[in-house]
Length: 190
Ligand SMILES: [Zn+2]
Ligand SMILES: [Zn+2]
Image 1 (spheres, helix red, strand yellow):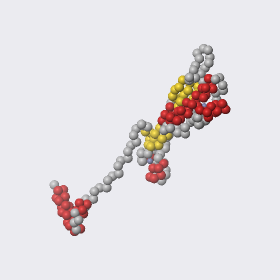
Image 2: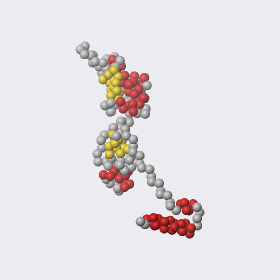
Image 3: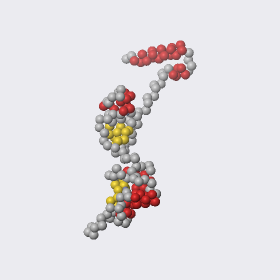
Image 4: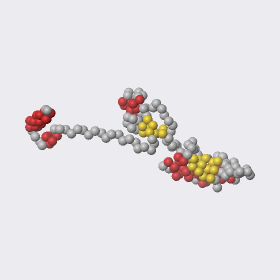
């Protein structure tokens, strides 16, 4: 049986078959590597199964000393064992970096580092669609919790509300407010 291992550097393929060496001196066993990122996919289990099956067929043919590439025989076996895909590279690639807009705090995934980019939405809304440093995307720690925007300010309570709730006639409301103003004025005096 081939050695099975994860490979965290595989990103352009789901798996890899490394044939062994049949030399008499220092023979080397065959090796199957499966891309680590498959584990992070929601349907990862299916991809891992398909990938291992695919690479096992390479191994099976190699073991039988047959051409072990994607030959007609390879495809025939693939069909027979029920691995549907010819090449099981999922479309979803791992996200390496996360960027955050300092304006709307939206998080943007990126596979490679980006420089001098600003949030399109914020530039559109607050800067006539032109680039501004204010919304330059900043690199954030992928594991950090997204910052929560501050809660919207509650409207300040209407100071008149208690008086209005008492169903006082308007002139009475005004009289009490004037009274209040006099009290505040006298307090303000030294
Ligand atoms: Zn293959
Ligand atoms: Zn933004």
